[in-house]
Image 1: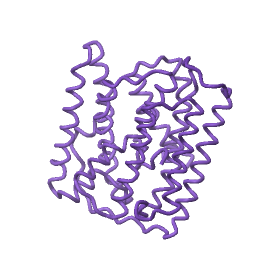
Image 2: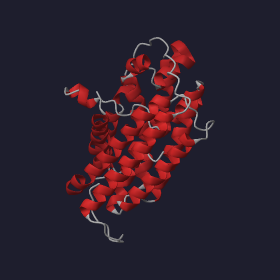
Image 3: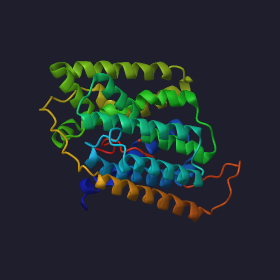
Length: 315
């Protein structure tokens, strides 16, 4: 665990990889965040992403529990966590309409992913819907940077980055295809292999080309002096998606059945909620609990946050 590879596989290591790859190397560059503000924003963003992985590692063990069908304490626990997360972000002044929308999108992803994996059936539209929603956690981090800086998010840049985030998610699944097949983790390429067999690479590349065309069209609307820089930054995030795809391997094993009581999930979400409130409240305390002000205050910096599917796998 003390080796670099071992540390990278921990929740903190995965969170650090996401913040490095998306926030430091893409969002801060595209949004032209001043370096001084980056130093204050990054610790809170890292803390939030770390909590995502703490809950993710617990929820994955309960993937076979259909929360919409079993509307008991497990179902309520996610809503309790969501409310606690909202309160904590409001305390940090990291809440606005964009953040609220993405928290709802995160819940929509959880329902879709949970329903698909628990019922064991998947269609092309389900896979694409999940891959489009799965980057919600990184989109949330970006929205939080605007909330913490007291600035509105530019809709044109948000729409420009949307297909890039989808392509980066596909690239991540291609990079870890064999690993995911062995572990039985949901993977977009593995899902396409099950749906289309030998035609999987062709079918997935068709979708990749569609998303990249969407990005390039929106990129063309930018001023020339920004276009080349943003194109370079964004293409690095999804490079594997436009390279030759890995050779297909056997089918993924079915996920292990979860405990009927869902006790592990209830405990995990409760712990995750407590960690969220405690960590974010502590951050608020360190900077002083003062009433909200219309003047922007530079602060240290998917359910609430979604259990996403192995987003933090970094090479």
